[in-house]
Amino acid sequence: MTDPRADTVRSPLDRAVERSGRALSRARTEGGTAGRNRLRQLEITVVISAQAGLAAALAALLAQELLGPGAHVFAPAAAVGTIATAIGQRARRTFELLIGVGLGIVVGDLLRALLGSGSWQTGLVVTLAIATALLVAGRGGALVGQAGGTAVLIATLAPVQPGLELPRIFDALVGGLVGLFVVALLLPINPIRVLDRAVEPVVTRLTEQLDAVAHALTRRDADAAQRALEDLRGLEPDIGRLNDALSGAEEVVTIAPARWHRRARFRRYADATQHLERLVLYARSIARRSATALQYDEPIPPALPDAVARLGDAVRELKRACKSGEELERTRELVRQGAELAGRAWSQGVRTFGEAMISDLRTGQSELLRATGCRPEDANGTVRRAAGAGEAEARPPARARMSRPVPRRPAGRGTPGRRPDMFRPPTRVA
Image 1 (tube, rainbow, N blue to C red):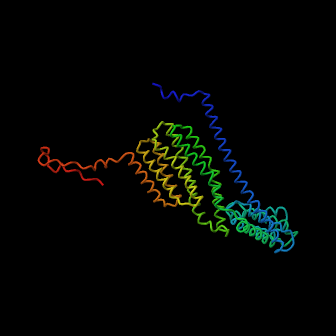
Image 2: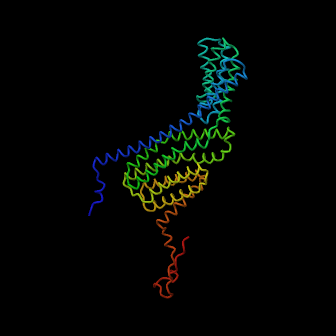
Image 3: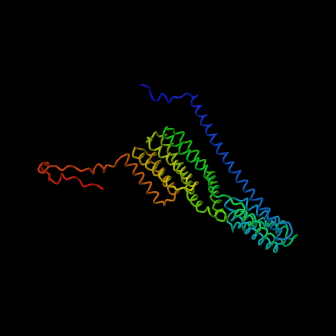
């Protein structure tokens, strides 16, 4: 008889070819991901550049019309600063800008009146202005920068050119308001499109690596499970961009009347994506425990890889339903199927790391149900019932056999020394 292990014996050349194939596949995947990221970045760059140019032109025009002739440099600069800040922080940036200018003027005027003008006075004015701004804001940012910059202008230019305070405040106000006007009314971004583009790389890599873990469990390839874990650990930059996109989309649906009709869809999308980061953490744990279980040569029931793959299918379906605006029942059904498979795998026999993997699977399934709008207790109950059904299907409980009726023996033919009522069937267990 042929030894089945003989098929697994490979030459060093075979292993080198296999490693080269994996490296080429990984390079293609990473290259495609990088290309999509560059395309998304190019689109965002074009939109922000157009917003900044339009805001600068309008701010300069309004400053000339409202504040009179003069070099109103700060108005377009403030507008551009508002536009160029991180998406989702523009309203806060404008508020910080105005507060920073006010602090710089108050501190600069007060100290210049007390100490006079000069080089060391300028340094002291800026030091105190920055310290005051940090105490107010609690961190760096536009408020601190504007407070320091305004203090420098007041300390150095006010002795030569008096009356800078009021124009500076009005320039900041005009520039900031124009920047918000452009973002909210003239060129608002599409919040759903921003979310779609930010969610896509996270969902793609998450589902691909869940599939990779399922294949690794099927083939008992611990190295493949470890590679999937490393790839899932590389999702942090994409998750950061997703959080920024959520903040920016929320800002747009809040301040842009043209996008108010998308509020309900945004809320649904946001409620779903806020659970995605936790799901990535559970997926990492599943991959890590899969690699360890395979390294320890633990048994892997056939239903366990299927449960992992079904979790990836449910994530894909959730993304598709959120993008199209359809109902989420199909996602919930895939989660229930995955929970049944996890329960069946537990009944088929697992050990330490297999049990931990099933626990992570069930927690991730519950998190995914919460992403569809289920309450935490409802999500946990659904997963628990589905897993129990899978366990019962694979291994019916003993009490089901105990409930079978026992035939009554004929009277008078019992065992000597026992009462006849000893032969009554046991009470049926609920």
